Length: 242
Image 1 (cartoon, rainbow, N blue to C red):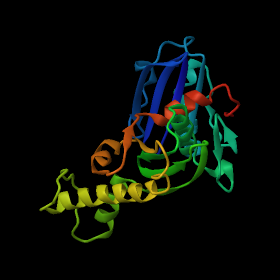
Image 2 (cartoon, one colour; image 1 turned 30 degrees about the vertical axis):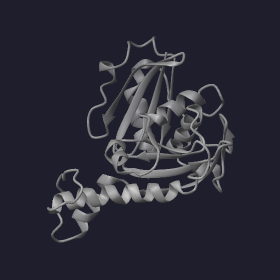
Image 3 (cartoon, rainbow, N blue to C red; image 1 turned 135 degrees about the vertical axis):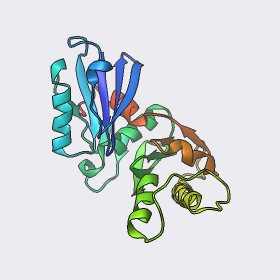
Image 4 (spheres, rainbow, N blue to C red; image 1 turned 60 degrees about the vertical axis):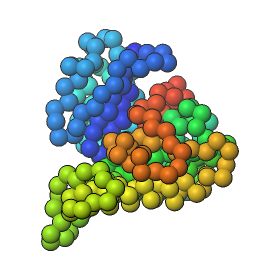
């Protein structure tokens, strides 16, 4: 049994996997206690820990400390020029975010190429994977909540409040909510033009805001929760970690 991790900017997502199936998945926010004892089997039953991380060395150290009772130091995914059927076109391959690399590997493993791989979290990443498994490039934009906070923090009269999902907003809270969601959907649809004419093309969505963005899209899409964890699982055993 392996413990797989996706350590993002605001949450640590985890999954227990045995052979080719998930036994359990969940998440902890960074600002809450990470009570792994409540979700993991006792020490001795987890064989190894692998993960993808975009956080600071200090937060990685917190992960290692939280998992110390299980006796394993996490091994972290390192983006490469090529792995698991995906080729990386980044100018410096190791500078691609490990979460983006894992999501691309996960998308390839799901047979979704050509496709647009979208992770809608604290930041929104929008990456192009062609039919040959080549990552051609992509975008990074502020996520929905980050956009909302930017408006509240840099304007005099726009509040940080929750808005509703409505077609034509008639109050400020809804206008902010829908403005941020449509900005996400618009960026995704524009990038989808890169693959739109290719047979079988689709958009893969994952991340906390995926369910809010998806209904606004006028393109083919599939939502695959925890796509990053799927990619981490595929990468185990391929020399992708250190």
